[in-house]
Figure 1 (cartoon, helix red, strand yellow):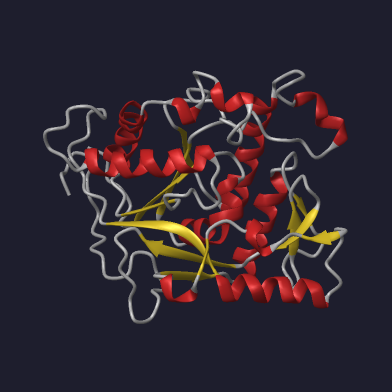
Figure 2: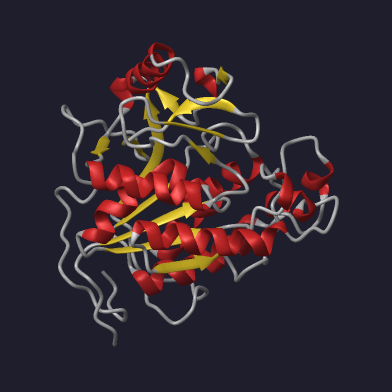
Length: 310
């Protein structure tokens, strides 16, 4: 039986780049502290737009080779974050990027949105029972901003957590039942988002022509709903910015990414604050009197062997 690190964090994200934008600081912190940080990515992001003109040939309606290219970007990003354990749900390319609602991509039989939830969850159960995380991070029921793949990632992760803990469930590989102690949904505290946009306005908006609306930031919630906060150090902020920059087909990061007016833009070229503080809601709705500063706070983190049931 393989001995696992004492703290084990799993993150379930829809496409390459979501992990860096949403949880880059958190991943860098726990990886540096010696926790096992496992990223599970559900699709290759084949339907994404491409920012650099020289790479425009990769898009779905031309060569349709963006997915394999983004595997390389993701590897680079994870090196910047110090994360060594990455898996694609069901293997690379098992589920295709679904695109936004109402697009042709969303109707394809092989897209992630069309996948049977229990079938997709069975692959994630394998990862959960192998890694045995105490903490799992994914999206809220709306996927943060309504993208079909983000919504499906939430559904699949939620179902997989249930199945992984069920002794009667015989799918999910050779590992025994495992109960994930705490599930978080990534979010962004409204006060922090508003302060970030205020800094960009004061600085002239950065290198991009216009500011994005605050609603473009996924998962904005009232501060009172936040259950945990990870406030990045300068090194963690720099790692997050470097990881985001690695996703060069999808993101443009400002030249000074670590300062108070750090910013980035997606293909719409609208400036957003590059947030160095990351927030989480508890899936069970619990909100501590003071937000936790450690996702593992109060949890037992003794080393667990892969064959154990805990």
